Length: 427
Image 1 (cartoon, rainbow, N blue to C red):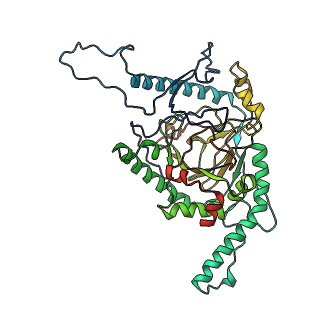
Image 2: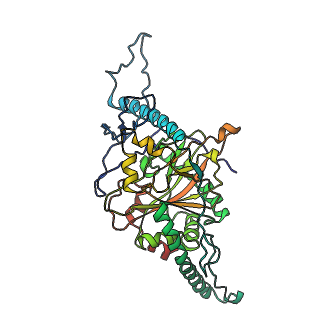
Image 3: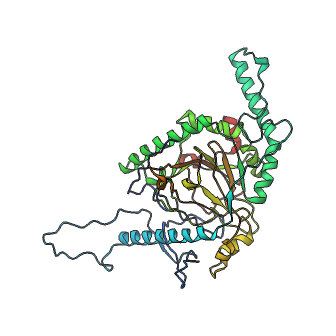
C-alpha cells in the first residue's frame, strides 16, 4: 500500500472544526473558530468536559505562535500572561482545547468496548445482478457488436438508465437499513484502479493546495476545510471539472452502484450536493471525540447523508471511523448532551462499529449519528505508517437551509447548488 505524503503546514491551511449544535437549521454561521469548553469538577475522569462552550474567541484566523524579538541585552523581559496579545491567547486556548479533546477521546476509547467491524448490507433483488457492486446492473451490449459512434453514445445512455433502474429496488432496501441504523456499508462501489488513481490525485492536490495557501494565492478555507484535531489530519475539498478522474469516480458511484438510489429513496433527485472532499488522517493523528455532524432537531427529519469511500484498505491501525448505530434519535442526543455523568453511562457498553473498509467500499451515514475518527497508529508497527484517505460527498435534504455545520466543499461548487439529478444527468 502506497504511503501518502504526510507533510503538514504550520500556517492556517487546516483548522479545528467544531461541529456546533445549533437550535435551528436556518441560523447564520457564526464567525467563531476557537471554543473553550467547561471542565467538570471531577477532572481526573474528564468525564463530561465537553459541555456547551462558555467562551467564544471571535478570531477567523489562527496566526503562528509568537517568536522572541531580538534585543540588545539578554535580560529582556519575556511576555507575561498580561502582556499577551489576543492572537497569542487564541493560540494558547486552541492548544489547551486540543489537549482536552485528546484526553476525552482516550476516555471514550476505554468506554466504548462493544466494538465490531461494520458489516456490508447485502440484498438480492431480481434483475439487479451483483448487489452492491459497480457494473452490477444489466448492460446493453447490442449483441456484442459496435455499429456507430452515435449508436454507442445512445447505447451507453440506455445502459446507464437501465443500471439505475435496476438499482432502484436495491436502493430502497438499503435505504430502510440506513433509516433504522443511521449507518450502511456497501461493498465494491468504486473500481480499485479508480481508487488508486484518486488517492494519488488527492496526494498531489494536497501539496499544490498547501503551496497556494502558503504563498497567499488563495484563502485557506478555499483549499482546506476545518477538521477536528487537525494535527496530522487534512480535509481537502476537491474541484469539479478540472480532472476527468473525478467524473469517472462519480460515474461509477452514482450510475453503476446503488449509492445514488439510496440517496434518491430518502431525499429524491433534488438532494443538494453539500460536501465534496477527501479526508486524510496521517500516522500520528489522535482519536477524535464522538460527535454528530448535525444536531437532532425535534420534528425535523435527516439533514445530510454522507458517503465515505475508502481509497485503500483500511486496517484497525490506520484509525478507521467509529459509528454508534441508532444514535440519530432524540433520546440518544439527549443522553449524549447530558453533563451530569449520564453521557458516559450512555456510551459505556453501547454497540459501535468501525469502518475497516476494503479499497472501493463505502459507508453511508446519517449526519446525526455519533461517530469519530480514531487514532492512526500504523507507524507504531515499524516504518512510516500509512495514511488513511477517504473520498467523500454529502447530499443535503432539499427542504433544509443551513445545516448547522460548515460544508467541506469548494465555494464555487457550493454556490452552484448542484443536485443529485443534475449530476446523474451530466454523467
